[in-house]
Amino acid sequence: QGPSGITLREAARRAGVTHAAPYRHFADKEALLAAVAEEGFERLRSEIELALQNAGSRERVEVVGVAYVRFARHHPSQFRVMFGSEVGDKRLYPELTHADQAVFDLLCAAIRSAQETGDMPPGDPARMGMVAWSMLHGVAALVVDGQMERAGVRDEQVDEFARRVARTAIAGLRRWPAGESRAK
Image (cartoon, rainbow, N blue to C red; front, side, top):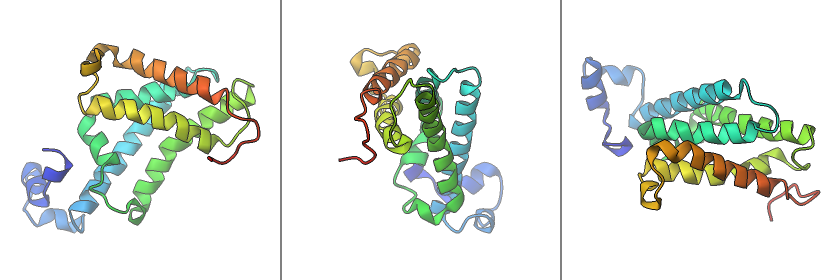
């Protein structure tokens, strides 16, 4: 049913507890969804870290991007909760904010690694990361919404498509204007 179809009563029923039990852990449905989103970011971080274990500095940004899209493909419902609007002000949930930032920090670290080896120009890794993330998040959203097949990309081809988009983002980042630290 997606995030909007979740109720604390239904969560309690599926967990085999009384309908009041979730209120001992969560103030409301939004708090439950924030916990689901936090767990998703922690899982995503772990999957990206695993994918990065054997990646050299040149491949790190690409590996992060492919792992990100792969996570969305394998966990579409959780991905929707992580990036959907059901959790209003995510800043009200510090653990969620921290888990989200930890994933983005992996992308920024991959960019810094490429900068240190000269594979990417100097620039603010967070600004550069937003460019790459925007492109890859678009692919992930299309995957989650079932739109890739309309473009002729079958499920088994999604990783390769994500790899191409990541490489396109990297090629653009390599042309990052010298000294540009802020988006204009």
